[in-house]
Every structure is written in C-alpha cells, then in structure tokens.
Amino acid sequence: MSVFAHLVSLFAGALQPVFAASATAAAIVLFTLCVKLALHPLTRAAVRGEKTRARLAPRVAELRRKHARNPERLRSALADLYAEEKSSPLAGCLPMLVQLPVFFVMYRLFTASEIGGEANELLDHRLLAAPLGGRWADALGDGGPFGPQGLVYLALFALTAAVATWTYARARRTARDAPQLVAPAAPAGRSGDTGAVPGAQAVAGMARMLPLLSFGTLLTAAVVPLAAGLYVVTSTAWTAAERAWLTR
Image 1: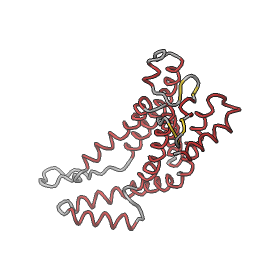
Image 2 (image 1 turned 90 degrees about the vertical axis):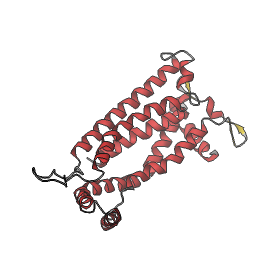
Image 3 (image 1 turned 120 degrees about the vertical axis):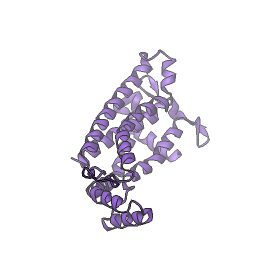
Image 4 (image 1 turned 180 degrees about the vertical axis):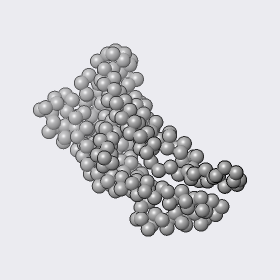
C-alpha cells in the first residue's frame, strides 16, 4: 500500500501547479485512468468474447433444447462449442476481477490512520472543501447537503447518476437487440415440448436485472471515502465510454 501511496503522491506533486489543493483528487483520477488504460487489452478480449457468445446464442439454445434431459451431455457439448470458438462464458468478468484489488487498496489507503508506521497525511487532502478521507455522512453533519462539502458530493452523485443512466439505457438496448435464448413455441395442437429452452426464463430475468446494477455506483459513492468514490466514478465513466467505442 505504501507503494500505491507513493504513486498517488508523485502524481499529486506533478499536478499541484494546476489543481492546487485538489491535486491529490486529480491524481486519483489520473491514476484510475492509467489503471483502466493498462487493462484495455483485457477489455478488448472480453468484448470479443461477448460478441462471440452473442453469435453462438442460437446454437447454445439448440444444444439446451436437444440435451434438456441430459445435463452432463449438455455441459460437454457447451464446453466443446466454446473450445471450438476459443471463447469462455466468463471471459467478460476478468477486467472487473483484476480491478477489485486496486479498489480495495484505494479504500484502505484513505481509511488507514497510518501508512508504513507514519501518520497518513493523505487523509487531510481535499477535493475543494471535502476531505478525501471523509464520507457523505460527514458532509451531512457539517453544513448539510448544500454546505461546502455537501455540494462536492452532490456534483459527484450527479455525474455518477448520469453515467449510470447512460449505461442502463445502452444495456437495455443491447438486451433487447440480442438473440433470444427461447425457441419458438410449438405449433398449436402439439403437446409436450413447448420449445422453451431450460433455464431461459432465469437468463431472461437476469438480463432484465443486470442493467439496474449500474445504479449501484450511487450507493457505493455515498458510503465509501470520497477518494474511493472518485475511483469508482472515474472507472465507471471510462468503462461506459470504452465499451460504447468497442461495441460501436
């Protein structure tokens, strides 16, 4: 963590002539962008995997229908299909998993009272009137939602909500245009097989719920230290723009 603190301090020193007292906040944003840029190759690979899975959706649906009564055979057939296409159902999770340690280090950095046995001076740094180690609850107790600190959080929440809304709209549009995993219904008069793919309703329900998770960043920004909130909002905004560009 001390290495991480050194990097943030190094960036802050370089940005201080431009951002003055808010240089550390700007350094967090810059550091986050560097992390996201380093992860860009993984994100490109994840998007390629998502496109492959979308293309394979009709074949997956057919395999689920064909092996509905034989789960072992279904798992084997799906594994063979993804191996043939050099893809994985979990490929899109890798960039997110790699970022988690960085977020936890950022959270710890601005909640620890000491770093390497010395007082954590980063806790006293600010974004305008709000300390980077403070939370929204602290701002509410010092001037209320429209006080000097509260206004900083309101601006952060407004940016977070704007990014979440855009992400939500794109996710809904993508889900609507994606191939469906439910086969056509059986012709009238036929009994038994309805053509529904096993588990398709659960998948469809999850697809409807996932876009709502973009608003979880609002809750995160409200409860974590301001520094961690800046990391989350910057990361989310980059991800939204990056995915829009990669899936254009």
